[in-house]
Image (spheres, rainbow, N blue to C red):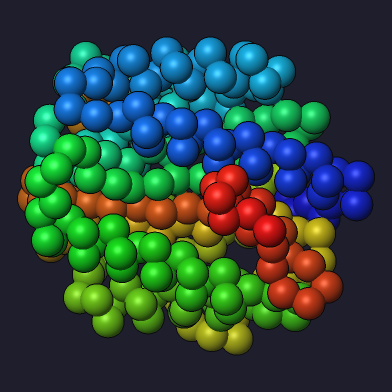
Length: 260
Ligand code: MG
């Protein structure tokens, strides 16, 4: 199903998007050497409740996961990249951490992810990988607008990732979002321009380029959820929820300092 939001719902989507962005920035500032992934999960639960919002994750039970997720945020460290289930791990200097969060408020969901390095040691390959996903996300957003096709966005994202030298996995990618977290259309992280669904104003998309340093193959962790790189290499992931507008796209999950 593809949803087109009316102005009332769009305004609620802005509120949800700002909430997701603000929670992620608070969590980033608190995620230091010695922080447990379970602390991050607990803080997220509290902030969602305080905002009067609902977790999209805690009861989530899709075909690709084992049972309900049971947590409030995805925390993926180093070789973990998607659906990282929080566990009793203490962050160390130089860890590459991805936080991926979706919540629903006022009946509208928003979804965003940030990758960053914990502590003072900044491994250059991690910095480069995070930068590539951020640039790919920016390119995908720049390509989005009314009349544009999904393939145009996929192509824009994939071009940046490929030129940066990363293999691209197409099993998981961006998606429509609205009254629920995952909707059509699927937005692969590579594709052919001019193909696919034609975007309309009022459509919300979550765009989410992610890469693994030297492989496109995922393996599932023993926890039944966390997806890791098959080679153990590091990974990165950047995501925003955007709204297609009359003349382009609006980012709904910008951090406070970047909002207009
Ligand atoms: Mg998403």
